[in-house]
Length: 202
Image (spheres, rainbow, N blue to C red):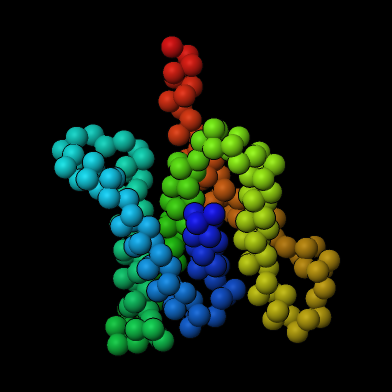
């Protein structure tokens, strides 16, 4: 449940225009605190991986390292853009560049986070939770992500647009884009399942 809550938090952060800029900045601070606490709780991983940088790291470890690096630079670029939470760090001369960097890193962070979540899954866990429950949770999060992209169009239409019109006008390409994070979960799950397949084929 905690990991699902973190994914929902990430969806809120990367859904531009669905969250006001000021709320986005303070929500990012809260998210950063949550993610740091989550990472701090994984002492076993740091103690196992850090001394082994000379060895070939597994894809799982590389993805976690990439996730932490992207998270760090996403927060730094966000701080340089801040109008409300950290206005003293805002650098006006590089705003255009930082906006592109921040948005790009935000999407990479989204994909890596969902991939990381998929790595934590396994067929055994899915069966234990219940395939129906997992399916409903996935559909719920997909619906939330789509709604967060639809919401600005609905709110700023002066409520002349009803939900039927909204669905008719919804861009099918955007729908496909919203599927990408969930495809990342699938690849993470696939990576976590491959050793099982190899063991079964021996």
